[in-house]
Length: 116
Ligand SMILES: C=C(O[C@@H]1C=C(C(=O)O)C=C[C@H]1O)C(=O)O
Image (cartoon, rainbow, N blue to C red; front, side, top):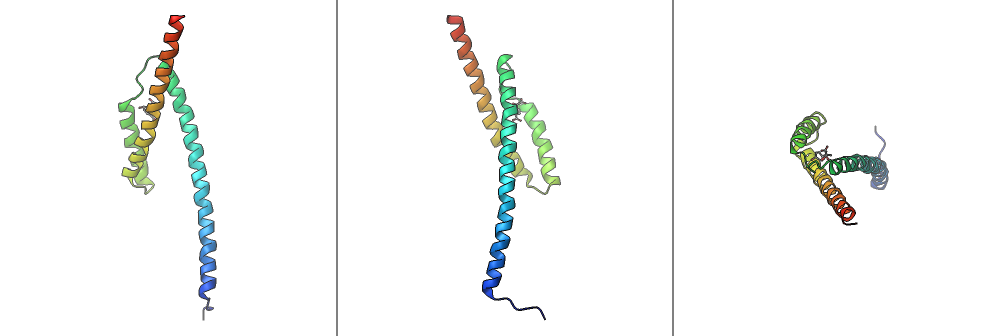
């Protein structure tokens, strides 16, 4: 016969399990923050390159290819592809905002240089 456990003991065990699961969630959140920071470091590099060569901030054709690829990866990983696309569009909107800012800062600096 299985040993009887008290409701208190069951609650304690559930809380211990919850703590362990949350530790893993926190580790994943930390990894995501580091991955995002690294991604933005590279996109800032792209932004400076685009500004220096007067290339457009956004590249919708590239984004379409990335979305197709990410949606397929999401399906394989059992993640909702609509969520993956939403997440991607959210990040890219911020990247494009950065690129526009880098380009306008570069244009202001150039204009100031011309004036002196
Ligand atoms: C980073 C780029 O700039 C923009 C941002 C993208 C991204 O964050 O993946 C993709 C395409 C561009 O709209 C790029 O052109 O590669």
